[in-house]
Image 1 (cartoon, rainbow, N blue to C red):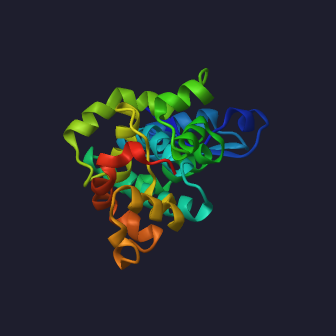
Image 2: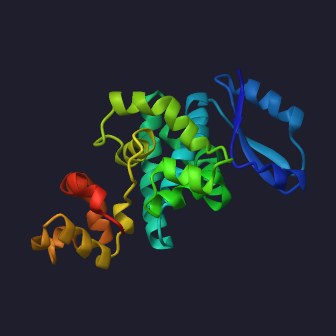
Length: 239
């Protein structure tokens, strides 16, 4: 069995814009044989024997496109991008794939295209604005299929059951927000003025000026601790 994945938008391919994808098969010579049948001057491919990694990248990049799309600015998006790529590698490795596959067209390449203009990114924007998934779907995207959300409903419950937030904090938080219809809070996107409001709501004004939570990156690195502090009061938060 061979599979193909990578950043291939139909509208660009139809215009014969240069497009690169990955053909994969456990027997890489088989993937190469298939590739030779369809390769053109504008449609070309890399080859891989990591069929698990390539197929998983094609699927879970939809999760991380939503995550990165939830960021309020490019600096925050860059942090989430870097953390997401690392976490994609960890997830793939858990299931026998190669972490290196994430850094190719099936991983970074496809993730970039999805962030740039896909429906997953649009849903991420709505989640980042403070809407629950059900609210965002009904209000903004009622007729759209959001691939990442559909996948979340299929495999999310098992991931939430079998894995922990400590293992995959970014994916876990997103899956909780979709599968349990919780509001999704991107801690790195919380500016200082909003952080002050959060501290007021949860009654932890004593943390103002605390170096451990002084920057967006610091809050991201301690997201488990912060989430525990605000979870009981999350319904009061309107950023």
